[in-house]
Image (tube, rainbow, N blue to C red; front, side, top):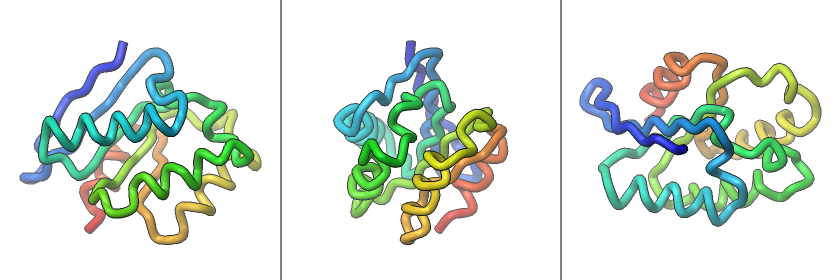
Length: 123
């Protein structure tokens, strides 16, 4: 079950999204989640636990990386994914992070508090 909590951190709304099972299973699900957050809050940041994102989507060959970056463009939304990535520190996650270096804001952190701090530090 997916839970969305809107946190107020230093006057900034952040959507904290957690799930025990993948809620983001494809690009359409990611875009729907961004839309839902934007329609129901003034949040410009989303933090998702790693379990909320399908591992298959983090495969650099899936095309999801480029789709996420395209979906974020012009939406005034920054995203963080937090959790244990030790099993994904290979080629797939590196490919996703490399795409992010084009200037869009997708961050990864091992702890929720770190993810929220990084999101709130973004302009």
